[in-house]
Length: 71
Picture 1 (cartoon, helix red, strand yellow):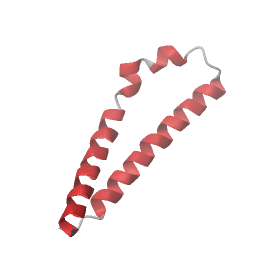
Picture 2 (cartoon, rainbow, N blue to C red):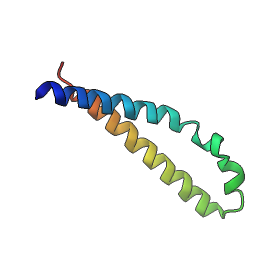
Picture 3 (tube, rainbow, N blue to C red):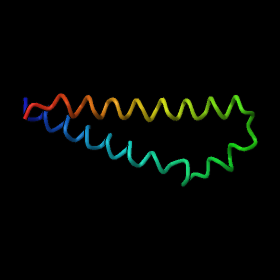
């Protein structure tokens, strides 16, 4: 049972790490600069703050999952 937990944490940690790395390209791929140019400065700042919050949460949980592995 402990091995299953370790493999689950390992899979989740590497999956979240891949998501964190891939998330760096999302604004460029989806063309956020062009799509956000019509928004007010406050809404742009809110959008980028929310995006960073989601990215940082994924990064935190990736580190947490990888640090809880006891192999």
